[in-house]
Image 1 (cartoon, rainbow, N blue to C red):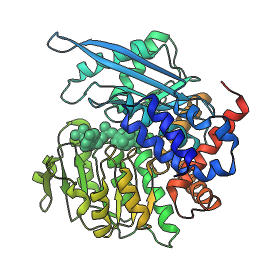
Image 2: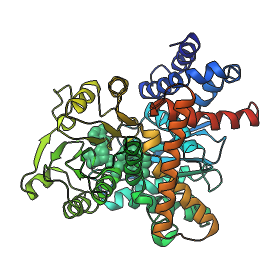
Image 3: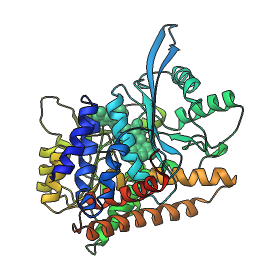
Image 4: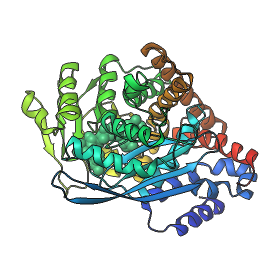
Length: 453
Ligand code: NDP
């Protein structure tokens, strides 16, 4: 690592010493940009990397609400408006008890580069709350969403900041949030994406992140003259991203053999067929149950509970060719990455944000596998949110085929941008360097044009 790179990373870490996830994301990006900083010293002089790591604006607020027992509950709400150099702030809301500033800053920071890669005019943001929707009634979730939006509405708008879903925020939550925004503002605008189809949502938005991660894997495989047909795939998570990853893998002739939740994972060597996936969708989205039920329902499938004493996740040790981590950050560590390679995996396409630790990424790179990092591979979700914004502005809806074709084209162009940037800066085939450089250049040049603001 050059002096300048370590100085920049040190300066950013020293400013917020207790934010490990944020540091991890910054370190990955800044290290990847080393060849750019050598060629373009003006970015160093302009303190571009320090500026991009500092949110333009950060809101933290109290969210008080009343549960079904009449007890007052207090949660903390956040919105981080990270960067608006290329468009309005755009990025999801996460409701999960682990949510804190470090996690949201890492997500907002990643979002800036990801949105830049999509080719659409979107800045980066992220937000959420430490509220846990698990085990809450629909009425409790509604009251929480209304309380959360009662503060957030002042800061967002269709030309300012357009939130969407993420972990714990799906169609139900977006509905409650939108309803409260509309009531407070008395206007019907495309202020959130992931909306219901009857009230401004886009076809394919729920599917987009998972479908996009599969399209990205297909693009990577095409560089070796291969396709997904006949491949066995490990998928983690069982939420929005995981479900539509499995759906698209089935359509493309591949076989998914695992899914998980925070309690454990299922392994189904026969494959998660469309019928079994329909069961998972009902289980997770309607009944809000746990994946363990899958193994009782389908013969031949096994369930393994999370064992906190293990230093690895056995899900990643099954034999396969492809892996789609689609649950959460740092779910694949160095040992897991070694196990993936030992089990025959040579394609990793990340549906989740930063699911692989730095040690795991080093294992992928040393083994020269096809590794599509989250900010490139899962950009289909936000890209389709961008398409939802475009349809809302036009007050018009595209067909399923139109949106899916645009999504495919966007994933192709993200792949091409990564490949070209990696080659131009001397690291052919390295998607980490390619994605970070391609995402950075557009934002940095726009910031240069706009002066020190
Ligand atoms: P969901 O809430 O729909 O599903 C999340 C899944 O991950 C659930 O199965 C959940 O299990 C599991 N999970 C969550 N936290 C943990 C944890 N700490 N340990 C183990 N498992 C966990 O979220 P999404 O599918 O929308 O998001 C999944 C990932 O994809 C996230 O990293 C998100 O940032 C990323 N992403 C999502 C996009 C989108 O469009 N939705 C866009 C781009 C990226 P359980 O049911 O037990 O909570």
